[in-house]
Length: 326
Ligand code: ADP
Ligand code: TRP
Image (cartoon, rainbow, N blue to C red; front, side):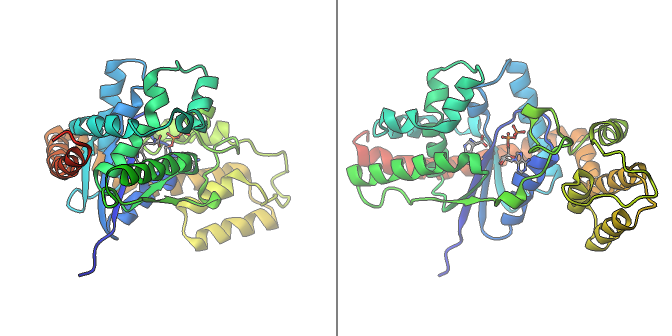
């Protein structure tokens, strides 16, 4: 029998999603759900390491669920749940932390970088990778699609799985592989740096029409080439973003219009807006439906949680036996 690969990934509910999140994380996850068994969750325990208030945490968790579903997560294909609906993950995190050397966590860039940004150095922030390892190992994941910044956390996960296998039995855990999106998948922000909410240069997936037009018109900086002159195509933010939304034909047309001159940035920006707006039309409509049917979203999450808990229970009973807790 051919075994299906199990993919798992978590997204933190940290605010309004932008198109960098879409092309870098959401779309790849949505595409993978057709290629194996997918487990996707909202990492709300992890978000507590940086969250300002219970209300924000609750609202962001909810809006991420709605937005992920609107963007094509298919609950018939993927098991979709909130991390906190499977509290068993904390028990596994604890067990993993008993074999986790301090040095392994002390080396993690993400922790050091967050401390440097002034985030409180709590035990949870420090132990973040052990909880992430538990997320991954609890569901027997084969492969974990993540951004480059999470690569080290996957190494910690593999390390901990290996240590557990050495200490308690060779077959306790599979060693999961990361699936890292390439450098080319990095979406530029409106200012040309990497798009990121920390840089305030984002284009939201689900913005209001007026807001998006304003962002495109005001925030994308263009040079002063007169309308009739050819425009540079290298490092053009308009072109880089347009390419994500337009057909190859329309993209090539815009490149040509840059090269021959006679077309202004105002027009290119309008075409960029139109292509963006059309690209997310179906998702926007789906989202409006989801917002009007909160009970459907609850159902999806409850159902996903029940399925995830079944899996979690199996792993935990194996692990409890192996370590001498049962
Ligand atoms: P942000 O940088 O806005 O804080 P996160 O770090 O929360 O975004 O990223 C969540 C997911 O979205 C990660 O998988 C990350 O790799 C992906 N992602 C974020 N920004 C981009 C981008 N500009 N291009 C591609 N993927 C991105
Ligand atoms: N740390 C991940 C991030 O910030 C989110 C996450 C938590 C995750 N647990 C995970 C990702 C398990 C993949 C697998 O993006």
